[in-house]
Image (cartoon, rainbow, N blue to C red):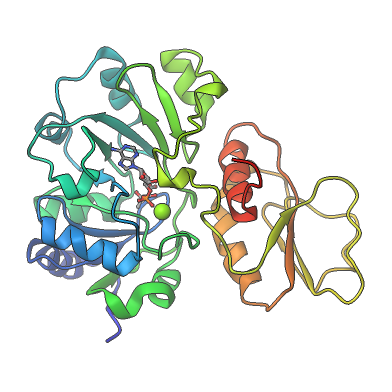
Length: 322
Ligand code: TXA
Ligand code: MG
């Protein structure tokens, strides 16, 4: 049965909170992407997430909080860097991977000694977590390996038949997943995302790009992830679209030659990387529906949110090495 879709009224959030407390699954908006939320302390409910997402068991899930005190309830004593980052960037698109306390069920962390914590800044997400009175464990609300949803419609199409409720808070304002930083010993960026690395570096110093871990600690790091069904190729130099091929273009700004494409999506006509990040997944969704043979993606500058955009495009392309 298709999940009920409700606008985020007070009544709807009350209902969503009780669904969560009773072990159900609620998709809800955050400033980054839609999450598929359950009570983080309910191991059974967490297990349902893996079924719905058809996600490998070993994949840990981010715990979403609305109260700063919850960091202390879930994590071992924090070092200074974590405290500073929390003060500066919570609530917002930053996830911190920190040493965990036993209260966090193993199924949430896939047996790791660490837990990923994030305080979303979306008012609907915060209200829902507060109303639920428990931290909410939530991956992005898409099947494993598919595009992350940035609208309630995306969620409904992909997993609407398998969950209890969808809260429709409109389009996610950032549109790309949170930046994940592991802070156990040396800081390691596990996933570039909605908070630009430069912002983090201003606070805790240079994060060497080589600290981008090669190990798939974070399945967001698996080579092919965040993928549309249509093959995608990042444009390298001058592109000549082969004759007879139905090609789509994911353009950053205005392309030079529009004629060879069946369908074009612009990430940001003015070349604004924030706008581009916000439009990335919905543009890919639309292109994916056009029955194209291939989607060509124009690269964007790798500064600020451009790093996260290129990371997702490379994953959609399926990195050939590693
Ligand atoms: O913006 C976001 O982060 C969204 C919204 C809903 O909050 N969530 C999201 O969750 O993108 P998900 O599950 O799609 O991606 C979270 C990533 C996964 O790749 C997971 O492996 C990693 O975080 N992760 C979670 N806990 C971890 C841990 N303890 N150590 C390392 N990586 C972890
Ligand atoms: Mg995801």
